[in-house]
Image (cartoon, rainbow over all chains, first blue to last red; front, side, top):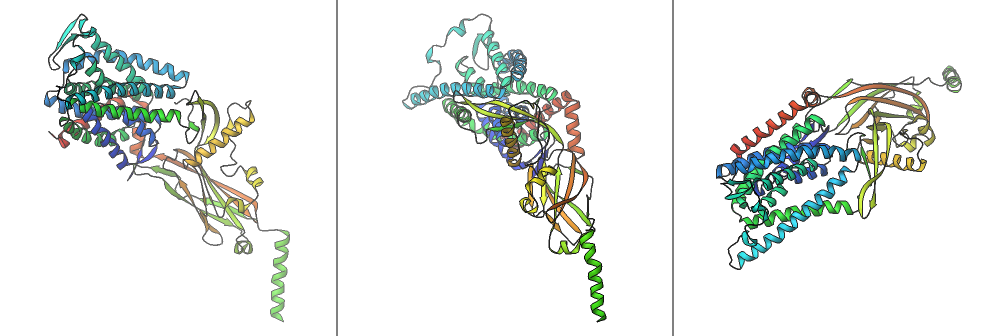
Length: 307
Length: 258
């Protein structure tokens, strides 16, 4: 069944989009990532213009992360206090990111920069996570209790001043690294057009030592706001949010997110991390291949003034 | 004997007419509608254009020596063509070329394959066919080889995505004077004013041309969304976010699994 998208100005298949939304929503509920880093490349692959894919992807992410965050709130695995502190940093970072985005676009080569950034970030984050989680899985198999705290619970981050207690996360740390992390992710997410969950989740786990189950809910909570902000910016400056496209993706996405959150409960923390690492690495490899392999068509068409 | 004379008279009357003043053929096309609305269910369509030949020579007609080429040309817009090149193993956009006034879409329907109708030169003179549209480079001082290369790439890309198409046999004569042309509207046909043109060829020679205009626009709902997005971007953004929150909440209620 075809449907005409009023902003993208093309006709697409409804079921393809619903399925795409459902698949990404499932992963989103499972891992606590918004799925922006998956949905945007998928949409571009399906011939949606990149500018519209980025903006509409952000809009879709709001729905699946809101839906996922609700499940986590019910289960008590959402740390509101931590979420709000991250968000405060995130807004500062996003604003700076939007500015850098427009500078990069005026210099040209924005697409290449984004691709390189994706490959570098996804590759290193995915690689590190995979290494750690496989070690943890091995340790569990040999009988030792799985723990992330072996490398010394009190690293330099825990010696900073302005300490704050995050009860849900069983955490007592300085707000400085939390704010800085929020800002860094806000900055990256507005440049890359994603919610930033795939960086947020490992950063909370490895840098701040937040328990994995709380990380997922808190990350989703934070993503609602960052992607909301991104959507608003794109809608009011670039007019690239296609509400019909977003709605189709959302319907699939929210259904998938609920099943994903349920499936996530059956997995242990280190298994969840290993799977997320594999997913992140797969996307990184896919993007890297695009950069290095001869493209089937060397020429591309675009409208002047739009990237 | 009288019959013989009668026949001769007809021949005498007819023959000079064929030799001295051939038929003054004319071609007319008509669209059943002057606007096509794109609705939510639009997935590309076939547009039918009817046309007639006036003062057609029945003999030429019987031999099938009349050919018609119908073109539906979309609005013209500027286009940038970029070429990727390898830098340190990475493929990146390096060279680019901007063209002005490139028709966004160009669908052709013909009675026979284009090369069977007339000489390549007459197509060139008429700027007829996607290979003969003049693509005006924004910067004409550039290397002509580069311009030619990017022009070719532009045509090939447009053909590959279906915006430039050719429908051989898409024009059929329903009677001696009446024909029907079917041109393809791609799913991503651009909105705006399209121009339909019909070219008549007789024995491989161009005779006459006729044109009509067609407005392709979004239907009420799609148009309303488009306007809202462009004129009230902030409100539209808030609406999109609100929709996402409501969908997320409803999804939680409908699909909850815990």
